[in-house]
Length: 378
Image (cartoon, rainbow, N blue to C red; front, top):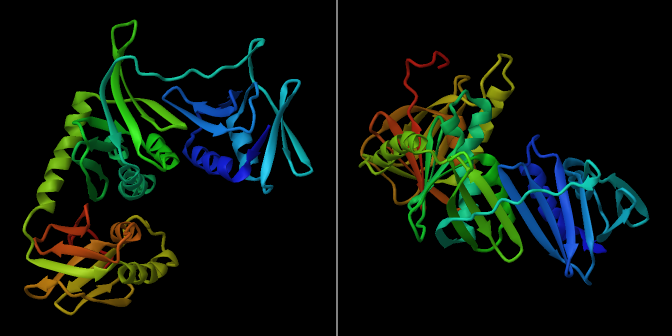
């Protein structure tokens, strides 16, 4: 059978980026002129369907990393999949590759499907919401690779009002779901949201195990993609993340004396230039924490670093600064925010001596002011 390389690679790339070391196997099953690519680590299960030009019977289980890396490296317009003995033969142009199939004893290995037997919630979720969780809420989670954080700070808390993530700062991604839910998702699951280009049918359920415990499961499904996962939805853990979520929303909704409208692109460029000096410093530095002084008035925002470098960003129309205000902030936090801005402008609310809130559309980021006695770097 022949497969369009571009279509297959888009899926292969996403799955390869999302899978971790616990996933070793990938299943290929063809029936009724459709090819299914399936992967699982028993925590989540993904199945993607591809149309074929004709009906064909095909079944193979192979090493996931090897197969996906091979497919992602192909340059031909299409490629062939065939079985030769105990191998899957991948043909691309004049090249051929043999990938060994995996057996369980003498039987071809089959991957277990995660299904929800007892569904309690079903609704539609837009692709735009999934995209915003993946590309905006994830900016906060991305910091955990550079920080010593607890497990909750590696999770996405999602309810019917939006998505909340927090590490050194916090992100409130406001949206509205059709029905009330409370979910804790990890990054591996959220990375797979990239597969979805259209609205999904979402299901939530709780299935009992023989030992009496209950497993919470979710699924997201379109006509050609099925993603299901077993999630941690312990009430105690949810209550622990709800506390920071509530307090963050309180700070975000607080009345701030200063509102500064800025060009997101101009702020990003200014921070990138300042960070060059920290990155190239002879001292060992933590790029997750780069304190800088900020001074604002009705005309401009001035950023300065410990090396004496200064950047000035013009304040845009719609701003209100009661009087000149200065504070210290972590540039790494601000960079993560402005880099995720899709719009032209971002509004910075500040002046309470504790926190700075960056707002664009339905996205709000809380960044704590750096207290001057916290660091001796400036």
